[in-house]
Length: 250
Image (cartoon, rainbow, N blue to C red; front, side, top):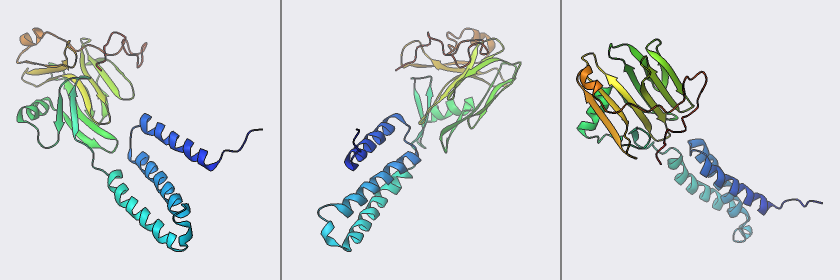
């Protein structure tokens, strides 16, 4: 016959379960709140039933309230801690631009000229940008992570819950982006109405990023590298299926 678990065992299992959640889940505000509520329960139990307080009678209320107040003073600022700096990363392991109010002028010009904006939303970074072809036709537009593609200038697209890849009418990847909890990873081609363009992409060398600039179509043709597709195509036959040969940088 199975024995009933003792309270100490239940508390040990509960602590182990919370530790697993802390490792496996993103640390959101509600998860932080759950941890601090659990800590408040432990503190209440210790201050109310410990050998050092059981003989204090009504003063246990004062001790318990003081402990909980001190815990709240520590927990509330941590639960409502301001988000970290917004980051824009070239590819999956390339150079990083940090939006923290102290950007270098050159980095600011790169993002401004490309029409890229990264804001902090309630669930993480939010990307706003748009991609046009050389004739100024809109291929894809993203506004605060909500994206729209525009056939026939978009030949195909593929995506998962946090990654989007778009191919233009030539079949070239013109946008790849992945949203992480602390950054936006991006590769793409941005053009203006004067024929100027730039391509941000991962370089063949690990942990490198490349930026190619051109002022006309002839210079664009001499650009050395295109953006490697991450997904298999056509998407209707390979929905959300990543290419096995697409190396993910560590």
